[in-house]
Length: 212
Image (tube, rainbow, N blue to C red):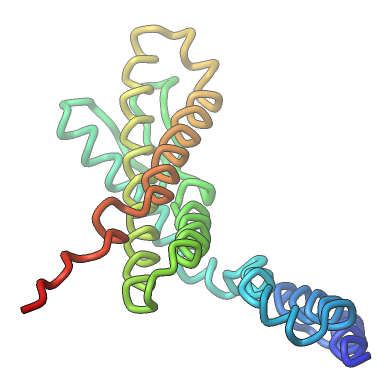
């Protein structure tokens, strides 16, 4: 009956105390597991339960701190990429204009924060499944997060190329949002596959030492 304690605390906290949703889910699920499987069962599924702590893992105060800065940085990278290719572009804050009718807006969904968090979550699971030691696991997560952010910048550069093409083929302007979804989704899936493969070389065991 010990499982009723965390279940009751989670329900009470959800009503009267402001706590992160992941912590509430973890407390409730832990109580249910304790109630039906006991402490031994709870230990067996402790990692799976811990994943509930990462439901909405970014605190509310993080977005105002980094969102706009990341948007401006992404807009500057896209502008620099356009200049590198000789594409005329004018930037006003986070809006890029290639012509009177062709442009792109680097909004909050383009700042790379969401994809970086999702990739960090994936790398956390992959590292656990592969039985990585905590130092290598931490490095694995850090590299996955940085890789996801770099891929988001690549997505913005691909959108610059798409807008350049739409200047010649105007019918493409009607499908810019669809193109963004296809480009972003394809790049994220390719990155996720790369991370799920274990960032080749990072999860492979080192060479065995020869015995005398």
